Image (tube, rainbow, N blue to C red; front, top):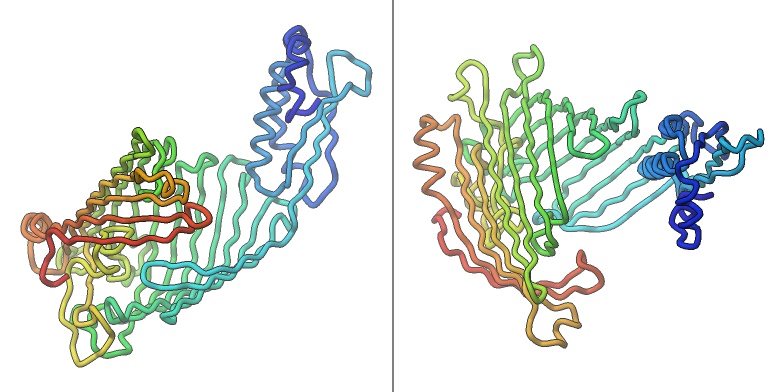
Length: 450
């Protein structure tokens, strides 16, 4: 009998109830041959050894089926119980049929990230060696000359545990001249482990970065950052979610929480970047009547250097927090809110190019969103609805400014909150991720340098 159908067929309910508690165990497992190593599948089936009745065996098989599907290397997973080849009525044979996915995959597309339009290409191999591994080679190119290359290897259930492992190599060229008058060359590697439920994630990053200012118009604070930087950091992420509430534009119902902790400076090399950073994010979505829903989200983050003379050392601009844009503070340009300095020279880079955004070490945002339907039935049928957002945020530097932490928090951070109100009319074209929006925003509390 198959786990997909035999345990849920209504005509067999009475028969199943009459025999579900009778002794039964699996004495033989028959596997279909393929690329996947037998021990990868057998490891997920070990749990059935503890089953002593048909009912217990059913539960264990459903758990095994879910675990095999989570490997993401099979088109489908079918587990079938059949009569034992020995003729023993208290035993049975398990047949495993798992047709494998295609060995290669490819993807190409365009998307918008911050203020850049990007092209992405990806090619990868799935389960080529039979260990449920996945190898991906990616390439990205933006309209602002930023390029990214990446090679990533992932393997679930690493070393016989329930942990998923990953390793990656990356090379980036990021052009930040429009916002902060510098470009960044990055070469680095990351290694990480994550729990099978996705709640816990720990990683290590070793990276070299070179910052430069080709336009020679960077402010003094950015010029001081130019040069080589070596980063060796540990990061831990904890995330918990109930329901679906991760998108303020299309909230459902639920609660989520995410905590990211990072410590950089792991090692004896004196030139390593040394800082600690903590970021918290929480969100809640509340459905209401008539297709109306409320969404609330809050973010708070802080980072500080550590080591001798830490308060006099500025943090690296590449690791700092930035504010502005749809993802953080609506109504403002991307990365254009917070500490800044006038640029030098006569660089002509378009709107917002007169000052360099420096980012900050202390960051907070709050967002309240109302999603509502228009009273017209024709608009509702066309997928046209509205949003109203109230957004606030603040950003300030904590170190390397010559000011005490108390002054930075009370005078700079607490007194520089910006508030905006934005109304959006949204038309869904093909799916919730493909929509046309028209918005009008009002900046309620600005700062002159924004």
